Length: 101
Image 1 (cartoon, rainbow, N blue to C red):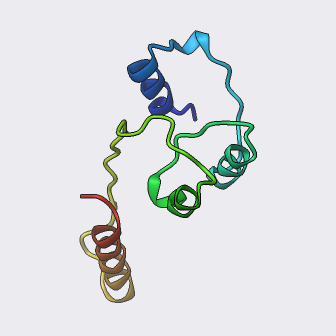
Image 2: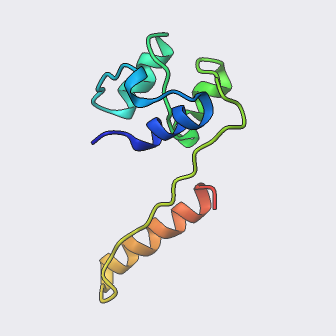
């Protein structure tokens, strides 16, 4: 899947059109962070994932104050019971406590 958020961010903040940039595919966000820490790439990664690296100075914000907001949903059946209901409640409670609202 192409990362449309990445394209939109570059276009909005740097006026970079899709045909003007070079893409590489990386298998996971963790691998992308490793490339950025090695100085081989930049990345658009959720702050929650890289808080430690930012605090240690291993990564820096190249666009301070410019963020991308992404709405996420937990899709589940309304008729769930027992352990599935507990799982859904736990996931939603954790997300509310740890993700920006």
